Image (spheres, rainbow, N blue to C red):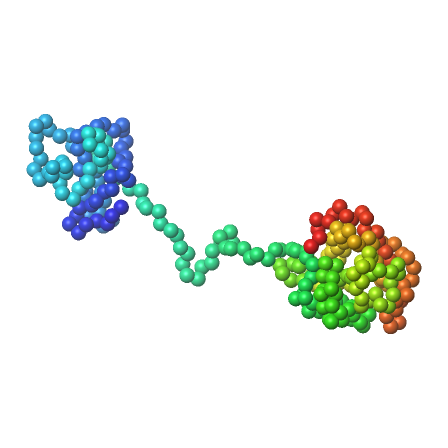
Length: 294
């Protein structure tokens, strides 16, 4: 709808103008738009309908039947009658406003449903990379030094394994932050030896789990168990890997036995004054869950 002109006339767009009446409309020969008043509330557009007198002519009418500057309310095709209310009645014309794009004022954030979501998933399991080495070492150092006074893997050893066999590692990330991890390598002998702590034997069929650690903020929440299950499923999807092996202190043996590990005897590997028990697990039953692999 266009703005009012200075001289008190209003332009009414015919295709978007509807005349509302309280009774059924009747056909008339003419409909004229004028301004009813200019009060405190501003001008309003009124459609007046007067039936034409037979043979009478109206002064000031243009060849189209309306004064200059006014448009007919109704169909514009030639020969089509205009629709208006009965004689003596007048109603306000209703105009449909044009669509307007809504914009929030500066400084006001959109609702969460309108904001673009970050691409980082809330929870993700994936193989570790060189970029994760520092985060891995920080979690490992805090988890083991406070208990045993030493780390299973040093930072350079972590980087070495993530270079040689990243597919044998698995990390749990919460909104992009590492919260738990496992690092492993391949071993080609029946039992672990001192060399197995730092070597990766590509031709081996046994995955040696070097370390499993959980960030202190997320402990006592079952995350270590969930990660170990997924890691075993991941290994089960690798045809070259037949078994998993690890060494742990006696107090942790019941924990690993819940996942199918069984004792094979005392481990020949010692770290300082610490002694360990060696456990192994067959991966045959985990092959069907290979969809969880990296």
